[in-house]
Length: 107
Ligand SMILES: [Zn+2]
Image (cartoon, rainbow, N blue to C red; front, side, top):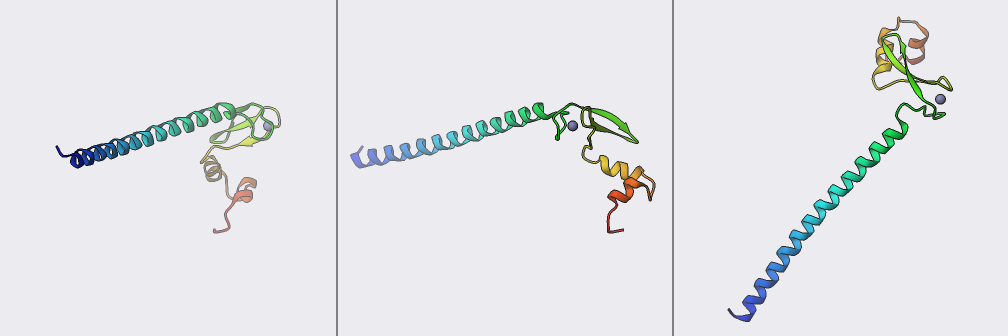
C-alpha cells in the first residue's frame, strides 16, 4: 500500500473515532446533566414539601368546601394546589365574598 494511501486511511479513521468519541461524550454529558437536574428537583421537593412558603412551618390539609387546602400550622396561611381555586370559585354562590374577590373582569 502506498504511503499516502495508508496515511489518508489513518487520518480518516482518526477523524471517525474522534467524531464518535465526541458524540459519546456529548451523550454522557447530557445524561449527567439530566441526572443532576433530577437530583436537584427531588431535593427541592423534599426540602419544601408541605412547608409554608412564608414561615417554613408545616402545612396540613384542611377541608374547605369541595377541596382540601394546605394550611400553615403556625401562621395560618392557606395555600391552594393547581386547579383548586377554580373549583372553589365554581362552588361558590355568585355574590359571595370569595367570588367578589377573585371574579374576572371579562363577565
Ligand atoms: Zn406559615
